Image (cartoon, rainbow, N blue to C red; front, side):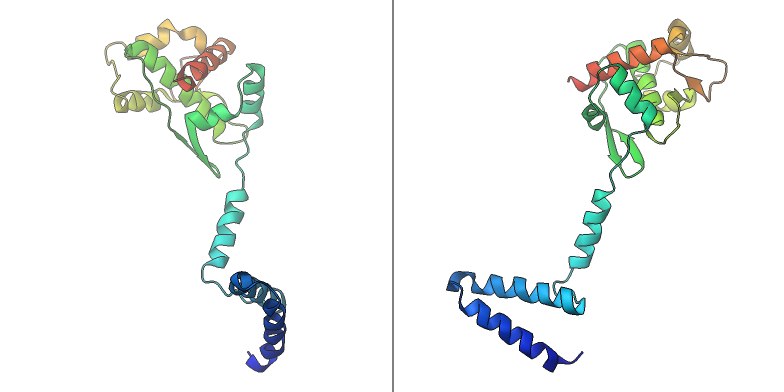
Amino acid sequence: MNFEELEKPIQDIVKLVEKIDEKYREKCFEILLNFYLKKELQIVTEPGVEEKEKEQGVAKEEFLVPIDVRAFLQQYNIPEEKLQKLFLIEKNQVRPIYKITTRKKATAQMQITLLTALENATTAQGAKFEFSMENVRERCKSYKIYDEANFKANFRKNQGFFKNLNDEEHVELSPEGLTELAEVISIVTSK
């Protein structure tokens, strides 16, 4: 880089800045010089500016709520913002952040079950409102509401919420289960 080529534009910036009130000169000089260098020479003068711009670009990559989840939310008049109260959503990753407050294990198990189905549907376009019983079992253990003796009995008692309980790895919610999910979202996000 030839610094002699920079002398003229810098002198022009200095002359311009000298016309401004003294308390604004330093900042004005920085801004104008940065602008000139970025525009004319593609030089980044502040360390970390490129990283900040990249982070802002990444932040602009907004998570797209899958169409089936949006349709569900609209059908039950649930604002999309409620998803932010239930899950931490970043790019294409979804993590539960909801709290189960009921102490009744059977009720808590169903809440976790239904919210797990919503989480799975939210993770990708075309994903179904479904869950794995083993995944729900592990979550119930982590929430300390696992009732080993009645775990499967709770599913059978609420079998209307599910299309079929035969394939324990892919249990899909029925229309009744979706209605109950809407109710659970209301309960969990209201606290």
